[in-house]
Amino acid sequence: MSFEKSFNSSPSIVLTTPGRVNLIGEHTDYNDGFVLPTVIPQSTKIELSGRGGSRVRVASLNMAASGIESYMLGEEVNNGGWLAYIQGVTQVLAKSGFKISGFDAFIQSTVPTGAGLSSSAALIVGLIKALRLAYQLDLTDKAIALLAQRVENEFVGAHVGIMDQMAVSLAAPGQALFLDTRSLEFKLIKLPKHLGLIVINSGIKHSNIGGGYSERRQSCEESAKFMGVRALRDVSIDDTRKMMLLPPLLAKRAHHVITENARVVAAVSALQAGDLTRLGALFKESHASMRDDYEVSIPEIDILVEIACADPAVYGARLTGGGFGGSIVALANAQDAAAAAKRIADRFELRTGHKATVLVP
Ligand code: GLA
Image (tube, rainbow, N blue to C red; front, side, top):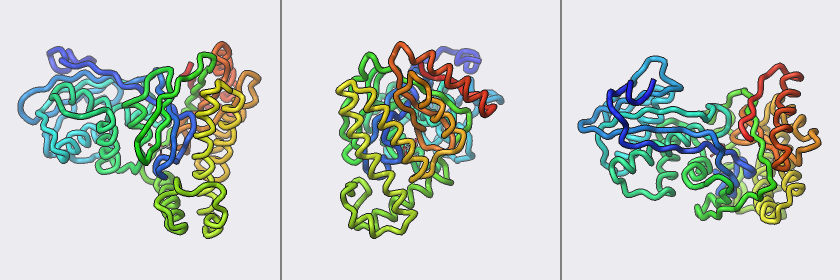
């Protein structure tokens, strides 16, 4: 299948948007905190041509066994599945006063779904960027990230923060996006040449819709209310008096968020100093905090992280993304990363029977 075969013409726009891996700063974005994601080589390619009228036709190499899906602008409904992301984009654009007409789009992606690597943000941001080109929409990359978040929050029903959309819209290879999710101010931090990033997908799928993700988010909002602050971002680890106001479970959850924010700031310094040992130690602390305080890890991911941390070439490893499955990110020297990643995936399969996939390097 291709754009040409699906629609009997050539696309006028071809655009590629990367997935992202979060280095550190997990579950901090909906607490107005800091995050530090970077892009991965896996990406979503969108080919698109605008047409007159209001019919949207979409085909996808990955998703649509049934060929071309179609709907009318103004009649968007969320029936679940990947088409919801497309319909969400056109509805949110219309609600925000942006005028488009019907279009044909062909989508193919190498970002695995449910892997904690922002396949949905890559799709939504990519589609809005393609429509920006097709219809000369007056939108900055930051404004596109905000619209993409609204698609997830208001249409898809995933109450996610702003990290993923900002990362895939603004970050570039070889750089990490140090983002303040309250002000949306950001700095691009150069990744040192000797840093070898490892990303391994456990193959155990996660979802940000409902369930654990929403429940964690609510706990944070409750904790902030208890402590009389706008968001957990406004509490520092020395505010023990405020922390003592919280019931035990909320205190654990808040402890993760507050310490994780501090770890992001420390990680930026470590990156700038090229100090992989320090960065690796922060990865390990972050994982322990997600596992014990925030409880968003699962036993298989803990095993994968444990195997990674035991590898002689690895400085540190952690669960990345929303959790409850998905991928890990680990650090090694650039020249050791490929061999270490393979060793980790092999040992994981031997120990658990699950086939993990090395995505980076
Ligand atoms: C998902 C969400 C993000 C963020 C992470 C956890 O990826 O989309 O907004 O909350 O989980 O850090």
